Length: 88
Image 1 (cartoon, rainbow, N blue to C red):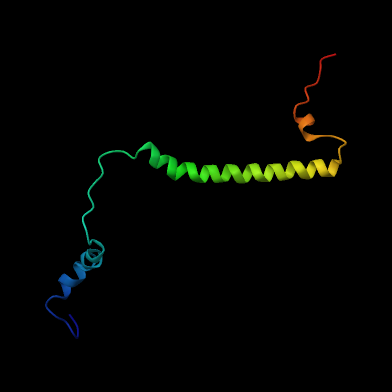
Image 2 (spheres, rainbow, N blue to C red; image 1 turned 90 degrees about the vertical axis):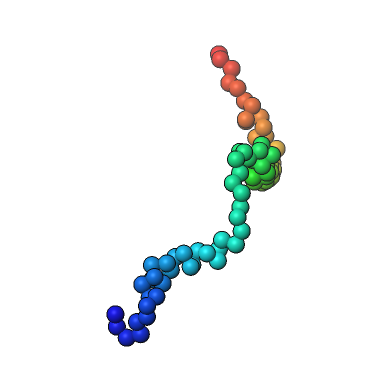
């Protein structure tokens, strides 16, 4: 209806998503029936976990050095961590 109407207008409106998605489907990707291997999981999760661990270890060692410098040899943090009180 209205000015500028044409015979294929209804079909063009109803198939707009087909025409939008079609250019994105340039090749057929085969479905993978086998689950991902252990090496894939190690690459995906292991590398970020390793980097995070190294960063946290580095930061904690800097904190330990800072505490030792602030206390200037009076009390060592490693002695505090391993101190087990004796029962009288």
